[in-house]
Image 1 (cartoon, one colour):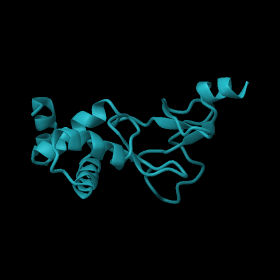
Image 2 (image 1 turned 30 degrees about the horizontal axis):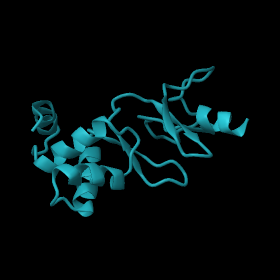
Image 3 (image 1 turned 45 degrees about the vertical axis):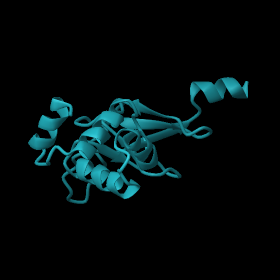
Length: 140
């Protein structure tokens, strides 16, 4: 097992199980991925793993702050390892490709809503929609 993941799991208050480590290892090379894809990667290493186990692990890792869950409209829940910042996403309306976008720039910072209704804002989720370079080239 990867000792960096072991200590990250323990620091988050979780046991460093083979399944949790395998999910974190798989997520390193698969940003913005769904549970089914994680399951396929993990089951290649741990053949007795079930899809339900992967869903449970993803939920545990998200709750512990080791993964981030995003839910673009029309997509299954996706998970990523990029945590600890307030980045956003851009989604291709044709092929569904997803990319990261650093914090929104402009006149108003992205964490300053016009009215928060008494809430203390901790993060903002912004999704930009458009055509990725590949789909733009295919359309021409």
